[in-house]
Every structure is written in C-alpha cells, then in structure tokens.
Image 1 (tube, helix red, strand yellow):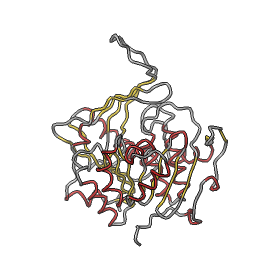
Image 2 (image 1 turned 90 degrees about the vertical axis):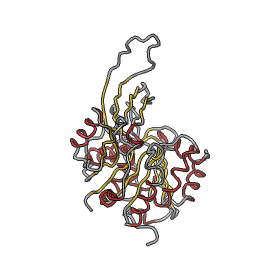
Image 3 (image 1 turned 90 degrees about the horizontal axis):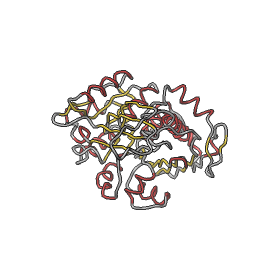
Image 4 (image 1 turned 180 degrees about the vertical axis):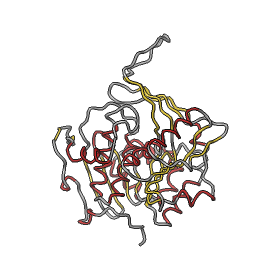
Length: 346
C-alpha cells in the first residue's frame, strides 16, 4: 500500500477569530485578540493531523479554482499530504467558513458548501483512492455528488479489499440517515458525536443509540461525548468508556475530526483499542488548546506525552491527575490488547 491513511470528503478553508461574544448590530468594527486560517473539515483536519503524526496521507475531495483552493493545496503540501486526488471543481468555490469562536470555545460559523458538494470519484480513480491501509470518509451529508450512492460503493470496495474503514458525518436531522445507513455495513469504526448520533437515530439514550447503529451493521460505534469523554461499543460485545482530558478550551473547531485521525494513528501503531481511543482524545484535546483545526497538535511524540501525563476529567467533573490505566475501560473480553484490523467474516 502506498498510503497509511486516506481522508475522503469534506475539506474546507477556515478563517477564525476569537473571542467573539456578539457582532456589533450597528455595523461597527468588533475587535478580537486572535485570528487564524486553517484547513478544516471532517476529511481535511483528519488528513493534516495524521500527517503530523507521521502517517503517509492522501487527501481526496474538491476545491474551487480560487485563492482559497490555492491555499488549501499549498498548505497540504506543507504537511506532506498527497493531493493528487484533490479535484479542481469548475463553477463552484472552495468550501469555506468564517468561524466566530466564543470565549468558552464554542464556534458558531458561517459556511459556504462549495466544492465539497461537487467533487466525484470516478471508476478510473478508485484504485488510487484505495491504495491505502485505512480509509476515512468524513462529512457524509455535505458531499452532494458522492452521497448519491458513490460513497457506499467505495466503502464496500474498501471493505472487500480488507482496508480498515472509518466514518464520520455531518448530520443534524433524522432525514440525513438515508445517506449514512448504506455505508454502515462497510464501516469498521463509526465515529459520530453524540449530537450527530442522536439526530441520525432519533433517540436520546446513548446505549440505545449505540445499539441502533450497531444493528445497521457497523463493526463498532465510538461516540464522542465532549467533556464527558467517549464510549466504544463493538459488534463483538466490547465496551469501553473513558473520561475526557481536563483542558482550558480555546476553540472546539475540528475536535471531532482530529479525534478521528488520532484513533487512526492508534490503529496504525497497533495499539490496544483503549489506547487508540485515548490517543484520539489526546489529539482532540490538544486541538482545542489552539485557534483553528489542528493548531494545538504538533507531533506524535507530543500527543503521546500529553496522553500519558495530562489530567483527566472524572465523570462527576472532578479532576484527576495522571493517566488512567486499562481498568478505567470496561472491556468485555480480555483480548482488548489488540487493535489490529481483522476483516469481518474472516
């Protein structure tokens, strides 16, 4: 395989500023302390983080023939991300956001969909896209052309070839489930936020949500729960619950996307499932310490150091110091020490 990790889907140009409590109603200038630009999106952020962690990465998606697209491709090159499969889409702009980060780290945004909805992977490109050990599809619900069955076809072919598949979405209502459901039987690890999972399922109880998604055929569900940590539920009965890291939030933009890349890093390293999730959480937490997706993530060495030493937030919001060990997870089987992918049905 040429690549360790392929991130297919939503890539966006972000302009971010903070802190923004409110915009002036009279059209006057609002002054801010920090301003940044970044590649973001469920595929874009993941690609950059995986590259920072030392994986060989390709990005698959679309940008417009505009200055934002020029910058996205140039910035990917700064991190060594292969962009041969990034398409220049005529007649549309690069997907772009203006992110107004609140003092508490929340980030209301203005977004133009653009090229994410226009790019399409044709038959001649499939072998190149699937020349990878891990395929991540991120941003289902925004990829208008790809969401009409093509994402499912590519995921099915990846699964057939024994490629590890991960999936994230952009979902806000139950109607979005029609785009997501066909991909789940070909997904090894489905990683939505609790809000996205609740919207897709129409359910509120986390265990009910996980069971519902497992019933759709995905190999495992990993729900990101914000300050309440993360939960893993697998088809084989594996159950893992981990608290979040205690951090001073700067910006939450891209936290879930960076979580996905951190989890893939753990898989690439052959870590236990618990460690894969913990690396994902550490990556997400570091991301939140800077303005803009991946800003706080620098290298695999620093991410692993943070994972081992940073304080954790207890489920009752108490702060504990040091790393939780394997007893903090709730595995239902002793072989949780292996996170190597085994194709289902083998």
